[in-house]
Amino acid sequence: MKDSQPYGLILSGGKSSRMGSDKSLIVYHEKPQCEYLFELLTAFCSKVFTSCRKDQEVPERFHPLYDHYDYPGPINGILSAFHAYPDSSWLIIAVDMPLVDENVLKVLIENRDKKKVATCFKHLVEGSFPEPLLTIWEPLAYPLLLSYVNSGKISPRGFLEMADVKSIPVPDERILLNINFPEDRFLFNNSNEG
Image (spheres, helix red, strand yellow):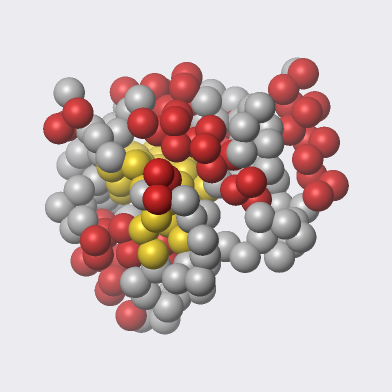
């Protein structure tokens, strides 16, 4: 049912300085990545928004949700989404994760625990840390996140590491791949072939 579904948010407010061009416009699946993710999230979320800076031009059809706060990094988009709709849960995905597909989102949603602060995938390598940029954040996270940033911290991962979350093993570590540099784009092609 759409009413019980989270809202969706594509984190697209970064400046793509490492990539050198707008990561939301890169084509991995025969269409710009932002469009691909918007369509993907629409199947799982009651509404979908695109997180963006105030100076970004995002087409209205992608429902731009402009930054309300001035914190650096992705925590700004997460907090801004909660500021706009504090009673909603949010399925958050970073725009630079091209290997996320319908099956991955099904696993995340099927394992969701609404009583926890968030439901997230856990990396299988490098210490099994939570992945904050492909996570369902519940409404009770909002005041805790505000308190967290007011204490001078801005790492969503750091927040999840200390919060009461449900973490699930990622089905395939490659799913959590971020494409940040032009030379990283070959990783997408190699992962798709594997």
